[in-house]
Image 1 (tube, one colour):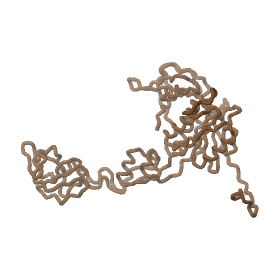
Image 2: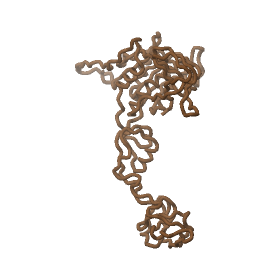
Image 3: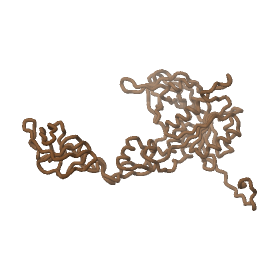
Image 4: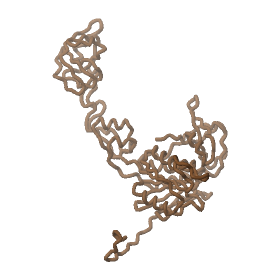
Length: 439
């Protein structure tokens, strides 16, 4: 390409590049469609976890650790008191009781964060606060509750053994101990541990950057007046962006794109610079205005197919741009888009993030009512799962069954799975479910 519009002084030879191709897709089943699991596994085979990146620990919450972490220090770092009270030698109060208290002179005080003023001599006591360093010569702490809380002299009403109310150096963590393992997802508790041993930065898989695009002339942004009776509000891009964010991604929602092939091509091309994954919704069926199928082959290697599932049969996938950025193209009906996210996008996001469990676990429930299903496709029914008195799970259908019905989707807390061979489940029979827990 000419630099800033200037012609090269010498024509450079053009090196032909081999066209990039996707791996061989799965073989369709007898019905001519790909199974949901085959399509999901195909997508997973086409992506790799994101490269490790150094992050400050507060920014690493929920991310996957890419290194073993060894503690550089002991924890606790020193012997310290677990109670407010008096540091003593256990042998000096060995015979103390309520009836025969022992009185000791108080020779100093140790607040938390300060060293002991001097070594504890036999037959004396030193006031000490919780977390304060145990003075040399002391081997136990008598809590305030077992004393008269004297200032000059303290009367002790309870005997103690060596080590009572003392936290020993390294009893929690020893220097050099591996405290977190590569592959762990960092929860808030792990962040506290890292801070407690003095580590402020770790190597993690970064949050996948996800760009969400909705296409269609009929769509209008929420908050604006619908321009005509033929228009609807864009629910999909908001729903998918929220779902991706709940799954741990950094999300960029792009404004609505009309049914204009050149406009869509430009928008997708512009977004590649900040995307680890692109999601589109709409434009993957067989209609005259389904422009996604027209445009995407110009941007890279693509695979459009039909999956034996309902809703969500039409699916598209590609690796586009110079970096072979993955793009998942989903149907435009809201329930179809959401089911597609759960079946395909969420597993891909989890693999990009370096997590070791990509697929939602299927739990078995008892059907609250009879459920009919069309055999030949994996059916995803919106469900409401609750816990019975005996602790077992019971699944009922959420209201409404159309792939465009947002109300029933919002009221569901599970997707019920009825496999390709099932045409009927009686009340009380087992049915599999994905619980829609956002993690």
